[in-house]
Image 1: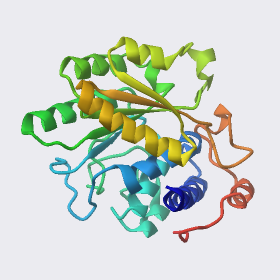
Image 2: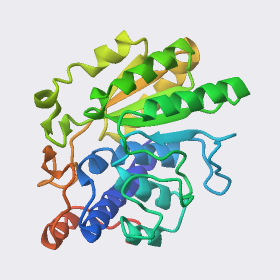
Image 3: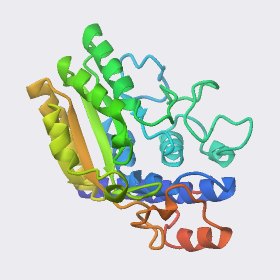
Length: 283
């Protein structure tokens, strides 16, 4: 797995570099959670998911599907989509600019390839993903549906309504992902709403659960492999809780809620980029 994980890590480093540059240029956006989930989405799009940008359609037939429930994490989402071939990497320079397809939250209005569902009102993604997974099950499509949530987002009640639905319909083809970084916009999750043990909560709702290091590429790949097998064997959905650091990759951004929705200054951008070597070429 060594050479492959090294390649994935190089991609994730470039994705983090993209995130910092996009948010700085736009003077707005959400770098913190984007940085903490960069390794996860890199692994997902560049190895784990069965998808083809050349033939992708919103209906998802014949391919795995992904839903970004934590819709403010567009910097990482757009970077991974562009880097894996859904649209030109040069288009990342239009992030959050008027008239472009790269809106602050994902939108389907302008038909951005790779975006199945608009999101941004938090808590809705598990419900959407469960509906897609049920459709695949009814159609006899053996492909999987993935959904990325935040731990702060998991305070939303609709998350748990979707969780119940998925278990009731035996959706073993649904894999949830939680970016468990312990931070949300107002501070540490525990200080805002007392998030508690998410693993026990998901288990109580009937989901298989896996906890893994969200910054260890081998651990990430192993967790996804395990989730696929668990779904097949149990006919129940699986939630992978990836333990991460908000702002991971840049020392002054890591581990604090202060970078949840804050753009770096040009000087801070340069300091961040000095810690993130260019590996694939900047946009």
